[in-house]
Image (cartoon, rainbow, N blue to C red; front, side, top):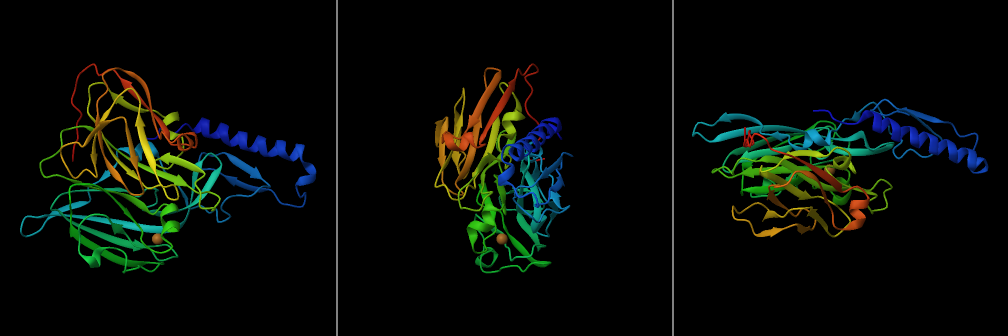
Length: 352
Ligand SMILES: [Cu+2]
């Protein structure tokens, strides 16, 4: 499902080119005429020419393609088989890299460190009691690991078992639990650096008695420090600032929406999630099947997470955003486009 507005990105890229050109005209003395133009092609096909600084000089063909709309409802259930005693085994492969470049905002290229080529990494999903086996391959240059939140043996914690780059491997194996939504992330020092570059993702453990059918989605609240001053320049739900504002998330009236929300923002002590025109049931960490709150506002510190559930009664356009205004004005804002549910159908596909 590709619904990126390529023409919009092209327009923004053109704007960057025009702005850079205007600067050259306005300040000819301030720019070294000897400096060479740097030319590069964005993943939307726009040609960007600038004598200014490019945020990451390592730009290569390994540009990452990431579609926040696809990521939103994409769950990785692994390769499923049964062990001799009937237990379900789920096998996944996660590959870490630290040399890829991603266009995080029109004309802003950022060196992402990724699991399976995206930030966030894939949303891994299992049912409580399943055996989860993750083959981890490090194709980066630095050491990396995967530290899962949840319950598992010490040797599977991804802290004291750094995996070397250039092909190092490790197999994490443990029983999925407890029920809920948990982050996973690299745990190599300096930790902030490994996290803020993008080595994290979401691990959902479903209860054996399934939750009610719903239109389910994952939102990872993250920030991007594009000038390396340990302050975020952009904020987002699912990496691309303003993405869900320019591409509203289509949902239906009278249909249960379930959001697995995880806060992975570094540097800022808190983040939050405000929903317009509605309130949601909130299950902190998702470990209980009874909601703790009925609210339109939750506050989350680093790696705090939970499950939100709501239905819209009235169709129309509704904002959701950080109520920390600085974060919403720097990208953490989106829109639910609520469509009239004419057929009154239940959503399909839970745990498929
Ligand atoms: Cu790492």
